[in-house]
Image (cartoon, rainbow, N blue to C red):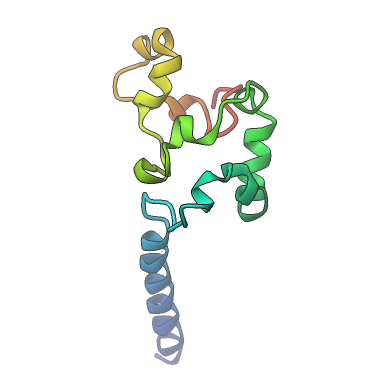
Length: 117
């Protein structure tokens, strides 16, 4: 019983954190000023999300100079998880052969794109 008194508050705290986390990572970009919207994504993301930036920078898309907004949209139409139509705009032949029920990133991990899972 004593163990339950310790574990229950911890479990509640974890669930609250997960609920708040899901709101924080909602499919929208944090609010930016008009001036900040003119800044390249990499300017902030090199510090804000360095691991993701490094993945993109060393990927085929990074080397090919495919910019963040081309997949994730602009600040007005931002998606944490890109719409698959974003992939199809450059990869229409591959998109047409995509297995039904699969997403592009089921086989191509986000920001890597050069390997299959």
